[in-house]
Length: 114
Length: 113
Image (cartoon, rainbow over all chains, first blue to last red; front, side, top):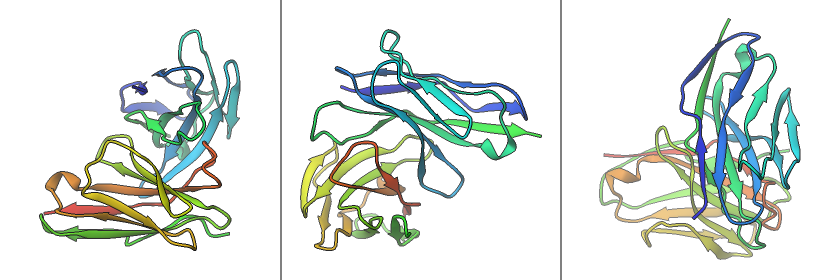
C-alpha cells in the first residue's frame, strides 16, 4: 500500500539556517504530494503541494520539488525564522479519481532557536 | 469566512462508553473527511462523507461510524471506547472531494480513561 517516510526528528536549527526535511514515498502511479504544517494546539495547514513530476510547490519561502525518479518530495527553506517552529507532515493522495485518502508521514518537529 | 469548526475541543470518556464528535465544514465545502492522530504520529484516515454517504473508508473497525447531514456538517461516533482510541480527531472539508483542497479543523482531543 501507499506509504510516506519522513526524516526523523526532532530538528533544531538556529535562526537564518538552511532547512531540509526529507520525504520519500511509495505509491502506484503519480500521486499528488503535499506538505502540511501543524502549530501547537492547532489543526493542519496546507503549506504547499505538487501534482505531477518535476512540479515545484512553493509558499512562504518553503519549496519542494516532485522527483519521480527518486520518489521524493524534500522540503527546503533558505533562511528559517523562529516562527517556523512547528511539526511538518509530508503526505500523498493517490492519482485515481474517487480515492481521496491522504496518507501522512509521522511528522518532523522543527524548533528554531534565536 | 469561517473555516472548519469542531466540537468539543477536549473530551474525557471512560473505557466502554460511546462518544460523538461534531464538525462543521468550511463555507462552500460539501465533503468531510475524518482523521485520527495519535500522539507523535501522523493523521490516519478514518472515512469520508459526500452527499450524506460514506464514500471511502480507512482501516478502522466498525466501532467507528459517521453521518453527514443535509447542511454538510458531520458527526463521528465511536462505540465501546478503548484506551487506544485516545487521540486528536481531525475533520477536514473540501469541495466535491477534490484531492488536496482540504481545510482542517483544530481537532477534538479525546482521552479515554
